[in-house]
Image 1 (cartoon, rainbow, N blue to C red):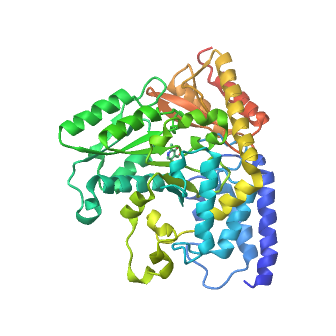
Image 2: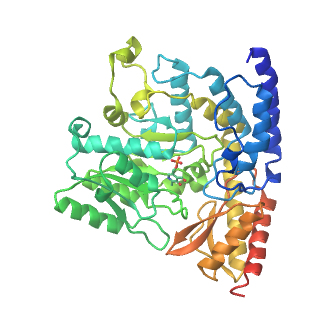
Image 3: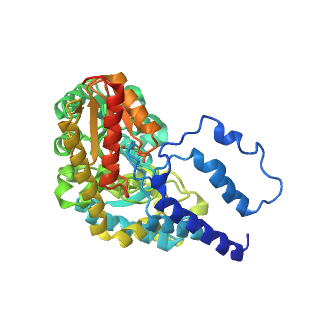
Length: 473
Ligand code: PLP
């Protein structure tokens, strides 16, 4: 492809994306293809000879699009949203255009310095504790996902607990880790990948709001220490995936201090809410944390992938993850005056993700991002009121932010059937969880383009489906 052809196709692609975003609401939210259907419509072998880019665009429309679930649709209420935004898409184009590999400061000083700056901006916008800023002893780094952010935190905790012996000699099976029963599965996965093992991971009980019970954590920590184990890592969640529960950070953090365990906070979805002063209570006690993660790629309009990881002591992360072969040595790194982000994560190669985050923050301003959070939280409260006013339904958990967990009183089968009907309509997509061992519907209102009319339409679909299921009055 010549640069001239690129200009032509590039304009076509930008128009294609603009049309797609503008009309995302017209497509069935959940893809309707059967397993294997997309692949069966494509050649089994790669083309031997070059094909025109028109053909790629044609197949995109004809074959790929039917197999897309539309995460950018305002009718998307499933899981937690993975928001993009137009400035972020432009940022992604520039990232691909430059395609720098920012493993070292030297391999693109701007990539490193912009990442440090933008994460300091974010720390200020979310009013994170001073210790997490690069101007103090900590700092932020962009990882691909919260799963990786948490894995890095577990590895740093492991090395702190073993005085660096984990990396050198492996583990002796005495380290233990803790998170609530409602924590995301990525926490236990990180514990497995870090070699600590699920058998050494404790699931702490939750209270009636599905938040961790610090009293039970205290018992588990004490019991493990009495048996000669070494509590290394505790993860608290701000905004659990199932129900948006808020673990009590201060009490958990104080227990971590008492027992010398690394305190990590996973706020993958909910962290964005702290852009608004009225929601900052969710971070009460965060100054006790050793690390903190939240995903701008969920609620903060930055395309996948972009997870922010902050640490209070950057040396703990770097000591655990740095390994320097001769071919990476350079004067700038050795001067100690620069950050080499390869030492802050697992992969050596690093995309210039800070560029899209910078584009988003500048294009919306903090006030524009706050507006999105406030709109979603207000819509969730309104939806929760509708649920409460309909005697066939009930709320299944508190609604602190923009996720509403609710269920039909008719039982699991009725709820499954209601969800299937709503999703088959193509006008909305919701998913479920289990709370207190009952199937629970989740209405996650986090899509940038979602307005009241879309939430209202979803509620009407839910009510119609409840009429059709015809249980519980
Ligand atoms: N932590 C929480 C609380 C989440 O809700 C999620 C995903 O929804 C994750 C971690 C995993 O995020 P990621 O896909 O960025 O690894």
